[in-house]
Structures are given as structure tokens and as C-alpha cells.
Length: 265
Image (cartoon, rainbow, N blue to C red; front, top):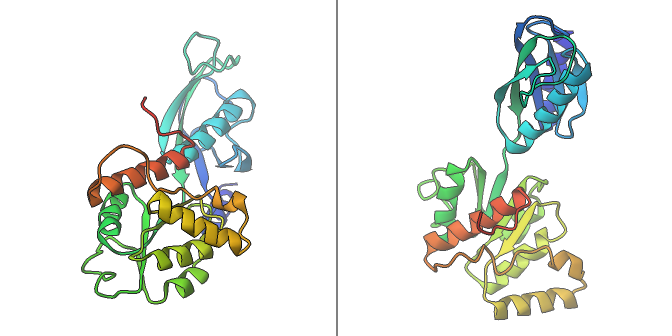
């Protein structure tokens, strides 16, 4: 059983699938299964392999596992297998309790910064703190280099259109378009507009953006695709320095990630 679980866990990790390994770490009194019992759960809360005993405890652990994946946290949860008023009581007849450890294996969110200027520089610093995999794309080697961006996981210098044409965008990819020219912004947006990126944002005034969208519409790009672009980019939190704009951008990316409006708590 344990070998199959480890093999399945390895397979899912290698396939870039988000999963959680659920392990019973402590048992008091009667419980469905003992210490060391394991199962793998996916992001939808579906059982992939293994079991920690079935019934209410397993169903609750599957839901909690999916929530851990969503939040990107590993933790231990204590379950009471009785009918007490405790919030973790599962109204089971066993009468014991179990501690379950949830170890999340979650692929990194990635931030593709198209444009290595002042805002891109500050944005990469903040993104590093938040744990993003950082990709910098620019045609200018004097801006896009390891000395300037030591935190970058990938630096791609060259033709922006060609680089984006071949970049493997996925649903964990966030793309920020902040190049040094109107022309390059539109080229970049046209290359990623049909992608599965979670977030696409482009900097610019409303006048500039109107011209870009008009040009793209005339090229046959559908309005529903254009409507998913966050432009002007960032949450409206004030400020106009590169640092302040970078904070507004990353705040909007976080809001999209967690399906929030970005308002005050």
C-alpha cells in the first residue's frame, strides 16, 4: 500500500499536479486506522490513492486537504471521533481522536514580467517575497541581466514576440506587460491573449489602451478575450512611483488568485 502511494505521489508531482499527502500521526482510543495510514487527495478533494479509514474522518480530511492545497499550506488537524460540541467533532461512534498531517505538494505560481524597466525591477522584488517563480523577458541585455535581477528564475533576452510565442503558459502563470514602448506592449498582448494564463495585465493610460484594443479588435480578436485583460493594470490604491505601482499590480494578481474583489476588509 505505502509503495503504491509513494509511486502515485511521485507521478502526480512529476506531472505538475497539485496534491496533498494525508497521514495519521497520532491516535487516542478507538479509530478507523492507525498511525502511519496515508492517502493522497487532489485539489478537488478527490481520493487518488490510499485510505485513512473511510467514513466521516476520511471525508472531512479530503475536504480539509483540498482547502490546504487551495491555500498552499501544510498543517496538522485534530479530529474528535465523538459527538461532543467541539468544532472538530465528527459525530462518530469510535469515541477516540486522531491527528492528521496534511503535506501539500503545490507547484509554484509564476510571474512573467515582460519589460525589465523600473516597475518590472520593483515588481520582481515583491514577487520574490511572495514565493513566485519569476521570469523576466526583455530585448535589452543591459536591463535584463542576472546582476539586476538576481531573484529571477529565468531571464530571456531577445525578440519579445518570439520568446512569448514559445513560452509554455499554464493556469498558474501571471503575465504583466510593462515594456518600454506602446508597440511592444501590443505585440506581447497579442501573443498571450489566447493563452490559459490566470492573469494578464498591461500598463498604460486609458487613451493608449483604447488605441491598442481598437487595433486588436480590427485584427479580429474577440471582445471576450480583451475583456479578461486587466488594464489599466493594478488595484486603485493610489501612488505613482515604481514601487507603489508594483504593489498595486501584485495586489491585483493576488486578488485574482483568490477570487477577491480587492476591497477593504
